[in-house]
Image 1 (cartoon, rainbow, N blue to C red):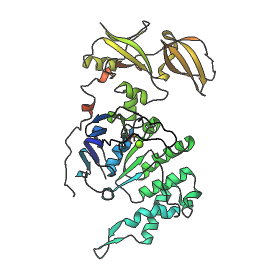
Image 2: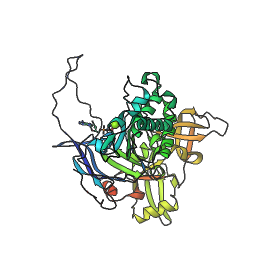
Image 3: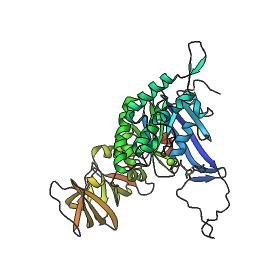
Image 4: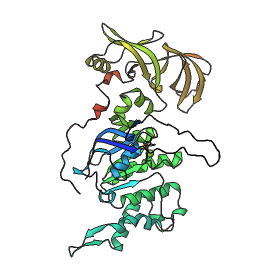
Length: 425
Ligand SMILES: Nc1ncnc2c1ncn2[C@@H]1O[C@H](COP(=O)(O)OP(=O)(O)O)[C@@H](O)[C@H]1O
Ligand SMILES: [Mg+2]
């Protein structure tokens, strides 16, 4: 049983004024590469801020976002491997900001599964149990016996389907098997919370799909709260009960995969979740007597469905310039719509991916082949979409106008104040 609450968490890495590094191979001074737009204050680089999340017992939470957005930092703060600059971390109601990692009852699996090469798989999995103490019959804490350790190792190995390799050394296993051993080592102690930081990133595509399914099964077998970090939206969508989309240290949206996919709160989320990526067209939102209309630059009009009408109306959305978002599989070849020249036509099996240029922008349409592949290369096509699938973003704020709440960050305030049970020192 473990509930994890992160309240107003901030992480600032102190700004270290490094001397420009001279490369070993050239006399040139290398310019630092700026990858993202993290806020920099006089206290340092703000890697995570305004992070509010209430993770329920046994929930599978996925933190997802591009490299450098603060996923690992957040996870490492939960694990206790990184100091929390501001805010409160509560595990099962206990304030644990200052509790040592080993006392948090948390296990972590990393991308690079460092196994001990000289130990067998069984010894690798059982290693963390050497430090576990239980209350003995005489009322004194004691270490686990060999038999107790063997039993737990066997149980973990059974869950992960690696019993036949227990006597082997890591070098005699494949990448996928080794990652399973690393997971085994994490679950053997029965942790309250299992943290995973990009555990599948080092595996090849096929193995990654297989291991993803294994993690879903693992989740059904062990009753633990999972916090899983990935930059891969497919992993996030398939594994998470809820996903937390992050960018530049801020949460962008928290929700079920379906909610995030169907109702992305801003353009960033809409583009990050879903593959191939959402398409965007410039246009206007027009309010007529019978409701809102989305009007493309060439005059093509689509009336958003009733749910969207209602949300726009409730938010009192005014006529304005918008960015129209449509997912590739929601575009059809029709008589009316936006016009584009097909530059690439790829047969993907049951569908083809058409890359077209619409008003100077690249657009992808996924068209079902229905058994007959047509090559549309170099053809001028018209792509239409309907009012159920149109996403309406403010051109100004890039927010979804159906959900244009006050400030993005305040959406993620905790609903209730967490109740602190006691403070462990
Ligand atoms: N020890 C550190 N000192 C200074 N900056 C760091 C440190 N670790 C991470 N950062 C910076 O914090 C940001 C977030 O990093 P991280 O949490 O590792 O991102 P992610 O896991 O999402 O790729 C990055 O810009 C990174 O450069
Ligand atoms: Mg990371």
